[in-house]
Each structure stands twice: as structure tokens, then as C-alpha cells.
Image (tube, rainbow, N blue to C red):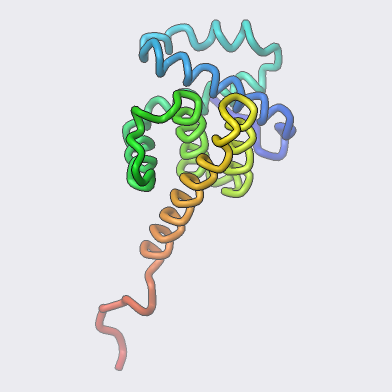
Length: 163
């Protein structure tokens, strides 16, 4: 499936796609992965715009495919919180945003985090924005550290080079 480029999908459509993704991830969380069979029908019933549906579908499928890895990333930074004990909305906002941080290089981390905070505020509790921000900021920092280590840190380089 070919996704519209970041430039061709207006911001409002991306925001709408995130809302659809959150709604569907919430349902999958409660009902189970068998619900994925109904994804196309859900999206057609909820959203008339083809590009928005395509973007939401890609987010949903990739988030579900990598849910174990995504949950592990969230759990590593969620001090004093077990992921299964988090509010269902918060947990799925975190999954969606972690997907964007890890798997979508075309979405600036700040945008992914801000969109997640807004989703949390809109669909969950008044405390969700700060909670989501704290978790995602730690995930973003961890990703930055991973990137720095894979690009080679001159301070930590132990290879023998020219003397």
C-alpha cells in the first residue's frame, strides 16, 4: 500500500487519522486482535477520505504488528507503572505515539508527542497530558541515545586508528 507523503496529507487529516487509530487500538485492546479483520469496514464507516483511511490503516497495522516491542519500550521508561495497569486510552495513545517515534522518520518527534498529549487531554483525564508527555519524552531521549551510539561516539570509540 502506498501512503500519501507527509507533505500531501494535510495536518487535519493526519490528526483525524490518529483519532481513528486511537479508537481502533482501544477496541483491539479490549476485544483482541481478531478485531483486525474488521479494520477496513471500521475505517470505511468512520472516515470518507481515502487518504486519511490509508494513513490510519498503516498506523494501526504497524502498531499492532510491533505491539510487543512498543510495549517493552513504554514499560522500560514507565517508572512505577505496569503497562497493563495504565488507563486503556493512555496506553493506546502511548502505543500510537511510540509507533510514530520509532517507525516514522517523516514525523518530527515534537509533533508526535504534541499530538499524543492532545489526544490524551481530549479523550482521557486531565492528568493524561502530563503523564503521556513524561513517558514519551523518555522514549524520545532513549531513541536519541540509541541513534548516537549507532553512529559512533568519538568519546567511546575503542578501535585502533592511526596514531
